Each structure stands twice: as structure tokens, then as C-alpha cells.
Image (cartoon, rainbow, N blue to C red):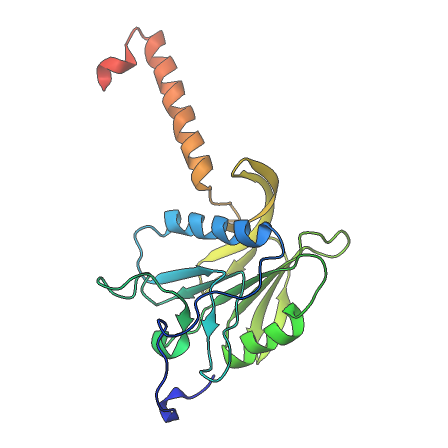
Length: 228
């Protein structure tokens, strides 16, 4: 990582471009990070020391353009930088003072720069501990690859899901339904390999419990509405 102390004036996040200049290759590059972020917002609802960026630029060198993963997670930074400040337009390393701990790339059809160009930047310039690559169209090789930075190189981690002890979560793939779409998605898992529920699943689960309770009360001759 660069030493910013020796540099002169550094632009702030509000002075830097806040969006990538190329469109997403497919809908999954939007939906998968959104799902992961929405689950985090539930299971870490009491925490304010994390930030998940989706399609957001990471500025790591004032002389270079931002690198834009599909998603990234930082721990030990505020979710909102200050009470009176708007939400982040981008993630600027010389302001945050902390690199993301996980980066996510979603490959649409074929590998382009995920393994070499971006991987080198994530490892050498940013020091990102976990690099996750999801290739949904693969049919022979594993669709999900989770790498851990070890001695300057990314080493593939076996199994699905993969437990990430430094984060306190696992990440893996599983068939499920999100926004009415049933297919394989990426999810967060607990240490025992149990998948965390999505916001939709929590709502459905609560509604089913309420329905069962109402039916039980009716069998006992109690009007459920009389209890509200």
C-alpha cells in the first residue's frame, strides 16, 4: 500500500468521480451484492463499525483511477462517516485509513481481468484479505472461488461455504429465492454452516408463525384480534 504521508494535496471523496464509466455486464452483478448487503444489515443491525460497498469505486492511489469491484466489505470503519455528512460517494483509502477485508467480483461469461489485473491490485496495493470470485455460468469448474491472501499471494480456500474467521462469517452458494427469483445465490453463513435468512425469508417466516398462532388460538376459542 502506498505511503500517503509523503504526498501533497490529496483529493477528498467528494472531489473524485463516484461512479464507473462502464455498465454492468448482467443483472447478477447488481443483485448478488445487494443480497449480501441486505443480510448484513440484519445480522449486524446493532453494529456501526462496518461498511459494504456495491459497485462503488475504491481509490487507493491519487494518481490512478478507482478500482470498482462488484462488492466489498470493510470492518473497523463507520457505516456513516459523520452525522452531518452524506453517505459515501466512493471509498477513499487516504481518508478511511483502512483497506476492505473482502472484495467480490462476478464474472459474466469469461475471465477478463479478475484473476490477474484486479487480483494483483487487491493483493499488492490494497492488501485485501479475502478475494471472492463468482462465475455463475460455469458448468465444469467450481462457480465460487474464495481466496485468502497468504504471504502476498491469494490461496484458494476449499469447501462451500468457506468460513472467514477474521470476519466472523462464512460465505457460500446455495439455491434460494430472492426478489421472487429462485436460483443459486451467494449468502452469509454462521460458524456451523447454517445460512442466514434474507429479509424476504424473515418476513415470510414471521407471517407463517403469526398464522399458526392465530389458528391455534381459534381452536382454543380465543379471538386473535382481541389480543391486539
